[in-house]
Amino acid sequence: MLAKTEDVSSETPAEEDFYAAGIEFIEAEGADLATSSLGYIDWYTQADLDGLTAVTTVAVNLATANGLVCITAAGNSGFDADPATSSIIAPADSFDVISCGAVDGAGTIASFSSSGPAADGRLKPEVLAWGVGTATVHSTNATGTSAVSGTSLSTPLVASAVACILQARPDYSVAQLREALFASASRSDADGLHPDPLFVLGHGVINAFKTATRGRTAADLNLDGHVDGADLTVLISRWGQAGEPGSVWGDINLDGVIDGLDATALLSSWG
Ligand SMILES: [Ca+2]
Ligand SMILES: [Ca+2]
Ligand SMILES: [Ca+2]
Image (cartoon, rainbow, N blue to C red; front, side, top):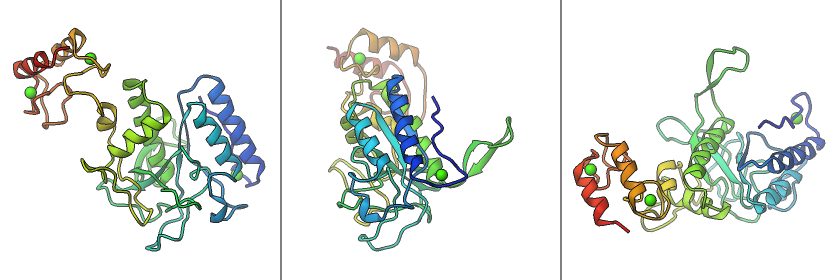
């Protein structure tokens, strides 16, 4: 569903009300997530981005409290080396929104990616995705694509990954999804979270596969919390698939191919 709430010919506080109406509309229609690649700062200062003040921020707080996963762009105002200065836009300061910065295709932070923290010191942005020269549908050519840069481009990539994650893991609440997404991102490791102390990189680049499979044993191929015949059916349907160890879902023993050794491993986890 699309909710067109922004008037691109002007910038007035009424657009924040339109945004609130749009997110209410989407939530009422039964959406599982909402994503927005815009933000408001003209009538706010960074001191106002405390999670409690901006109209869009409060609207997103209500939406996430109702179980709607919300994703939004951090902004394109760049960053410096001072963790005390911020350049995010509302509603990126909302408590449970997933706010997104941008990296290039090599994973290097984009110079335009906005930095946090929120005015009350909370980590923002939380995650990163590809937002430099990102391939996207063309704005005027119905059959063409173009390469566009901005956190407006990394944000829908995160949203589409989260949509896939929620299909695999409908058990995730907003809080559980955030926890799994952050713990699976590139700056996190087995020891836990290592958020950027300069508030530029957040928890790093997202990893959808790790997020979707977090907390599930490798043999639970349909991610339902049990190892049983349904998982064996999945394994057989993927028989013979090969790739980098750790990248093939069903390669339980991590040797790069799905074969009898994985069936043996699955049976050893049965029940
Ligand atoms: Ca506007
Ligand atoms: Ca299963
Ligand atoms: Ca294997």
